[in-house]
Length: 385
Image (tube, rainbow, N blue to C red):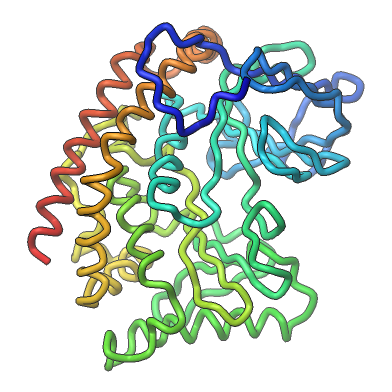
C-alpha cells in the first residue's frame, strides 16, 4: 500500500515505518568522492508502504557541497535502466539526501510540501527511507529526484536550459552577470558549443538588464520572467526563512525554448527554518525579514529589485492571502503526518549520529510554532503593500 506524501494523518497509531534502500557496492567498496561512480546493486523493501523492488544494477557516488564534508554522506544514484522507485516516475538518476545537520529530518520535506501546495512546477517529492550500504545501516535519508532536464523531471524540452545561481561557482560552464556579478552556472544541458553557451548568457543578461533598467518596472521585463512563479518562490523562502537565496546558493531557474524564465525547482532547505549558524539550532529569528534593504549581497539585490514592482507586490499579497486561508492548516497537518511516519527511523538515526535534539515531538511542535510566527510576520509584511 502506498501512503501518499500529501496525506495528513493525525492518528498517532500510524505505523512508524519507512522503506529500506539496500545498496551493495561491488567488492564492498566505500564511496570516497563525488567524481567516481562505483558499480552496485540496489534493492528496496517497501515495508508494506511501497512495492518491493530489485535488485537493480546501479552506480553510486557522493554528492553535495558542504554536506559532503559531514560524516553522514549524501549520495547520487545512476541506475542502468530507467526505473520507477517508490512509486515515482521512471528515471535513471536519483538522490539520497543525508539531512545530517537537520536533526528534525523534516526541513526539506516541509519546504517541498509548500512548493506543492503553491503548485510550483517540478517540485520534488521527498520520501523518507532507511539506507543500508554494504550491510551497514547509515540512518534516515530522503529519496528524491535529481535536479535535471528530462521527462519526469524539469520537462522543458531539448532546447530549454536550467541555470543555478550559487557562490560555489563550480560547474564547467559559468559566468558572472554584468549588473550584479551573480554567479550563474549552466546546470543542464551539457554545452556543445560556444554559440550555445553565448545564447544562454545573452538570454540571462537580457533579463537582468531589463530588471535594472531605468524604466523598470514599466518595461518589458515581465515578458522574459514569470512574475507569479517569482512570487511563489519568494513566498516559500520567506515562510521557511531560507536566507541562503541572498548569497545566492542553490537558486535554480529554467527557461523553455521560446518561453520565460521560471524560478525553480526549489532545492536545499537545511539552512532554513531559522537556523542559528553558530549553535545549529533551528527555529530562531522568526521575525527576521527575508530581504533587507541594507543587504549588499548579489542574491539579495536581485530578489529585492522584483519587490519594487507594484504588480509583484500585489501578486504577493494575493497569493499569500489565498495560501494562508486555504493551505496553511494543511501544511501543519502534513508536519504531523511526516513526523509520525519517521519517528522510529529518527530514533535509529540519532543512535548512529548523535546530532542535535533527540526529541522529534518537540521538533515537530517547534516547527509548527515557527511557521505560525513566520506566517504572522508575512501578514505584517504584506499589510504595507
